[in-house]
Image 1: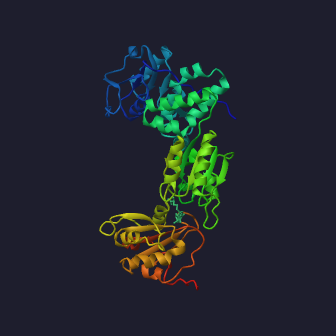
Image 2: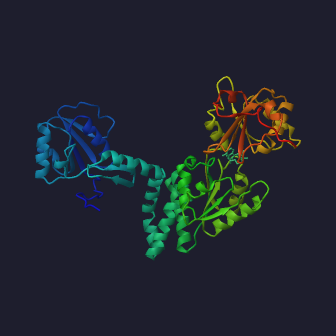
Length: 465
Ligand code: SAH
């Protein structure tokens, strides 16, 4: 590893003055950067070429005077004329750290790329060698961070005296801070208000002071099954979980985005083998959280859409366990994207209904009558094995036999397959679909999609009973 020619540090500027010489774009860029601080910023130039009203700074339109630097904390020179030269001399005479824009040799310090989540700052520097690289790295780090990480850092600072008072042991304090900065419950509270954050941090502190770990459950939408359709928040919470409780529909590659040493429990309810009943899952997540574990309850698509989330949340509420919900890309939306189908479309479809295809055999006529008459795009879940009966039921309730139908098996995944046709084509017989979950779209808007790669439903060979 090479040696650094600069040393990164956080330099106190609160209550001090930062002086910028120059009246153009470069001066404005530096002003934007330093006005992130609580220092007072003064810009001096005889010619002000651009509008500085977007930054909170005092602009003096006059020649530079050496006395302008008396007591200044930092000086930026973004002026290539005599004022700039005079300012460089004056800064050096006073030993004030100097940055000369775009002339690295004349700089005492460089300004890094900054991620500002006050009080948390991340500064990335290449000593001026590769600003493009530092910007790219900055974007990657930005994506990893919760938008509330600054609030959490501030909260940790506010808790310091309390933690010192309640926890004597250094290692125990560290464990508390580790829990504090990773707790989804604290994050949710801190994002609401500082007071709510302190309340949650206090609860955690009291538990740590008497050595109890508080568990929590995050109901996380995994999306349709492609790793890159997971949200950044889902990925982060998976990384923080002690246990990942997932459904069978969530592919292994997505589950593996969790921490490597996290326990993984498959409560898969594949059709036919009911390994865990819903009641058993409810009991399981409550028990794990009571053991103090951070539980990621990973569900396919969005947890609130046909995910039995209502029952799990009721169980968590009843047990008094902290929980949060992270949305995911629901299968119907992935199917719409795969087939470029605008599920709402001006003058064609005024809405989009996510509905269960179950009930085709039940006497649940209200459900089918409402769907048949809605005039909206239908996205039917859980209907693959009964697709023909579903189509017949819709026609029976008054839907046009010519209504376009589109089916996507394994939506959002690399190996998806698509089918298109009409309600009557689908009603005519059972199709041999490939393995995997499917969305059935019904409605005029389906015809506006791109189904060029789809197989014709009518041309399918029908199952012989
Ligand atoms: N919460 C999930 C739905 C779970 S119910 C979501 O929001 O997507 C299970 C049903 O979802 C399946 O029967 C199927 O209709 C649908 N489904 C889930 N993943 C799918 C996928 N990748 N492609 C097509 N349909 C899918």
